Length: 130
Image (tube, rainbow, N blue to C red):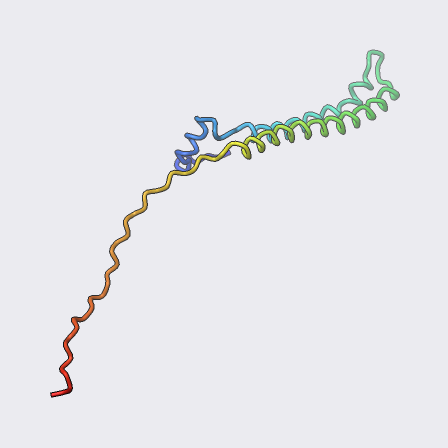
């Protein structure tokens, strides 16, 4: 993640320091990816761990390990997804319930006086009756 210091807004820094900007939703998403990879690796290694028992390799334990690994992957990924979604939902509820602070109105720049064309002086029309 490349952060350009010049582009960081002072209001974002203030929001971060005042805990108005939450970083945990981003960490939940990263944690989901890391957790999913770990669950997959654990499920894939399960048959080999069970197959190589104390008495050496056993095909029966290996097959049981395959079944246990598939169940572990399926249940683990569903559990991880539900847990992460629950945490994200809590943050979305928080965003919906906490009223946003109204932005202070910016001082309007005074508008320059519109240059009106000068009206020609009204000339008294000579009367046609003499």
